[in-house]
Structures are given as C-alpha cells and as structure tokens.
Amino acid sequence: MADKRHRILIVDDEQLNLDILVHLLGEDYKLAVATSGERALELARKLVPDLVLLDVSMPNMDGYAVCATLKADPALRAIPVIFVTTREQPVDEQRGLEAGAIDYITKPFSPSVLCMRVRNHVALKQYQERLEALVDERTEALARRTEQLEHANAALVRAKEAAEEASRAKSAFLRNVSHELRTPLSGIVGGVSLLRAEPLSPTAAEVVSFVQLSADALEATIVDILSFTGSVDGTVVHVEEPFSVRALLAGVPRTFVHKGKRLELALSCAPLDGVPAVVSGDRPALAEVLRHLAGNAAKFSERAPTASLRADLAEREGDVLWLRFTLEDRGVGVPEHLRERVFEPFVQADDSDMRRFDGLGIGLAICKYLVGHMGGRIWVEPRDGGGSRFCFTARCRVSGEKVGPAG
Image (cartoon, rainbow, N blue to C red; front, top):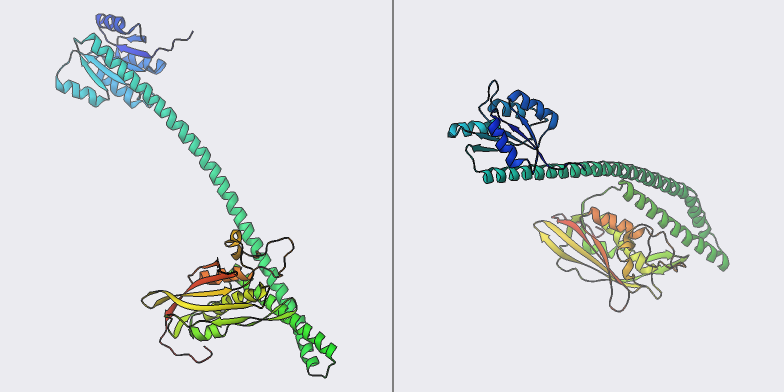
C-alpha cells in the first residue's frame, strides 16, 4: 500500500539534532535527511518535499544560502521552509524570513510547539495546493467555455451576416418586382382612363370601375412594399419640416380599397389638446403611419367602418414636444397574445388558418419602424365596447414658422 504521508526534508549538520527531529516526526511523516546544504538541494530537487526543516549554521553553504537557492528555483520555490537554529537574535530571524522562510524556531524548542507548527504549515501547503488545483481547473474550464463562446459568437456573426444578406436580397427582389409591376399597372390605369372617357353600357362601366379599384389596390400594395423594403434596408429618407397638426389629421385618407370594394371610413377628429398650431417634425412619416392605422380601421371591420382620431401633448422639454396620437376603431380587435407580435412583419390580427382579411401584414411593421425613427413607440390596447385603440408617440419641435392650409 502506497505511503500517503507528507514528506519532510530535515537539514542539519549535527547528528543529535537530526535524531531528535526524526524521533518527533518519523511516525507521522516520511522523512529525508541531509547534513549539508549541497546535499539538501540535491534531495529537494529529487524528492520535492512538502516541508523543509533547515538549520542555519552549516559549513560551506549555510541555511540562508540554501533557502535563497530554493526560492530562486521555480520548481522548488513553493516548498515551505522553517528555520530550526540556535541563532536567536532578531536580526537572524529577520534575515531568515527575508530569505523566504515561513517560520523561524530557535533551539532549544518545545517538541509539542514544533510538531504543531510543522503540522500547521503542512496543512497550509496542502490547502494551497488544493486551491491552486481548483484555480487551474476553473481556469481550464473557463478557457474551454470561452473558446466555446467564441465559436458560438463566430457562428452567430456568420448567421447574422447571412440573415442580413438574405434580407437585403429579399428587399432588392421585392423592390425590383414592385418597380416592374408599376410599368404594366400604368398601362392599365391609362387604359381605364381612356375607357372612362367613352360612352359605356352599365355593365361595361361596372367592369371598368372594378378594374380601377383593383388597380388602386395594387398601387397601394406596391407603395407598401417599397416603404417596407426601404425601412428594412434603411433607404427611407426622413425629413423635418414645419406643419399644422390639425391639417395633418384632416388629411388622413377616408377612402380605401379592399377586396375590390371601395371602403369609406367615418373618421372623426377630436380637438387638439395642448398641441401648438404649428410644429416641426417628419410630417410624411406621421402621415404614412396615420394612413396605415386608418386603413386597418376600415379594413378590419365587419360593419360600417368607424374610427376616431386625436392628438395631444404627452410631454414637453424646452422646445422638444412629445405628441401622442390615438386612433380608436370599432373593428374586430387584436387578440391579447398578438398585441406585441402584430407589429412584426407579415403578422395579422386575424391569425386563423382561413383569414377573413387579406393583405401582406406589413403595414404595422412599417408604422413601428417610422415611429421608432421619430423617437417614439407604438402599441395597441383593447377598446371598451369592442375594437382597438392604437397609440403612438413621436418627437417634434416647436416651430415659429407659419404654414399654409395644406401644411
């Protein structure tokens, strides 16, 4: 059976001293002895003991030199050294501790005290070794984890780049398709205009009207696709200009095309609450957000579409205004589980397998992008009595300019 006792190297040129220490420690520790400094270093390199008990006064190479040599060797410097010597002057003890010893015991010594100090220092070294092993283990585990995270991060970067490239390719495809659709659409619209100028039978007039409605719906879809691709690839041009909030609300479209039918939205505008007559901001972006919200109010309704719109001053910091716009409709509403996702691309409030309402599901995604660019946020709440309440905020500024009626 392997001897698991800790090893101690005893160094002293006096045999009597060696015998005493061997008698005290031999039962609890594996011992090696040396009678000179040179032999002590030889055994230390060979055995790498757990502790060295070292005399100071020895011929040729004294204990101070032995200790200094041990501490200069990277393979041996961790071995604790205790001086056991007859030199009892403070200067001797100081020199020993400066050489790297962890303790200094003078002769004659108390056997029990010496044994206790040896046991404590061996235990401390054992604890230190365990701690260092744990640190090494944790460091190695951390290095492995760091390497794994670096690989994962590199994979995420590659996936992100691939997704961005795919998104750009998709946007370019949609943009090209939209532009290509506009050419034949222009021909259709032109042909319809020519037909309207001719006398037509009631049936022919109805067909022409249906074609016109379909062309209008296709034109609106193309505009939405171009706006969505612009928001995805960041090519939308944003402006800041003075405008009348009252005129902005009054200019929100009331007529929309859905499933080949023209829908008329009964939209009422409440009086402005604390909003200056003229502000400066991204009027085209605000108009587009309001157009989409009004279009949804008309489209997602099972009865005659009705909605109300208002704007109020949510907050003011100097010349910075935070306007809040609220549009309440009486449509089908937005289920609670979709109130966050409904602003993501290609998601509609009606998520059933057989959707009652057509469309691309990009209008609210465009709204979210435009509102975010204006420093605001957009959300939807249930309306008492049915329907939805869409709210969004936008950052504007006080403007001293005057605008015309259409501004």
